Picture 1 (cartoon, rainbow, N blue to C red):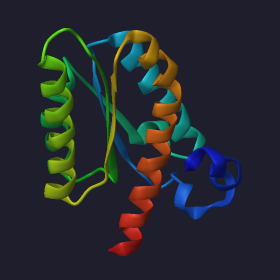
Picture 2 (cartoon, rainbow, N blue to C red):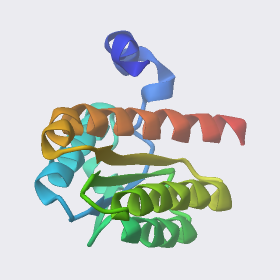
Picture 3 (spheres, one colour):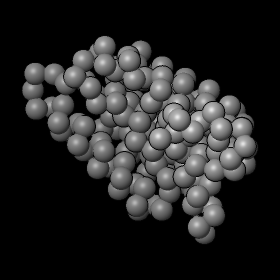
Amino acid sequence: MFEAEQGTLAGTDPRLQGRKLKIGLVQARFNFPVTQALTQACTAELIELGVQEKNIQLVQVPGALEVTLALATLAENGSFDALVALGCVIRGETYHFELVANESAAGITRVALDYQLPVVNAILTTENVAQAQARQVEKGRDAARVAVEMANLMAELQ
């Protein structure tokens, strides 16, 4: 959706104006090269959309299951307009992949609903490292755009 619109919306559309926003990022360190690329792409896009660097707070946690506790803590403090969960879960040979993917996604949704705050799920769930690497930059950018648009929408609705 955003890919086709980005060229026309990012510069002029008020939905994608981030200069007044404060955004919290929670990055899982597990699969660090991928999560670092996600975080860098997300941060760069937030700045491109006008979010001031001083208004972007990054918190790192060990893995995807720890992301939701950090998100809830940031949401509790009430100073963010949106939050972004950044992580990468790669399928292995056990059921652990499904557990981590499903529970992290459910937790992210729970935080958003409990705090009535946009929380973007940018935790990649892939079959292998190559799939994760192929998606890391665009997913980070998409997450930034969704965070800004949803923060602006929620402000408008309130």
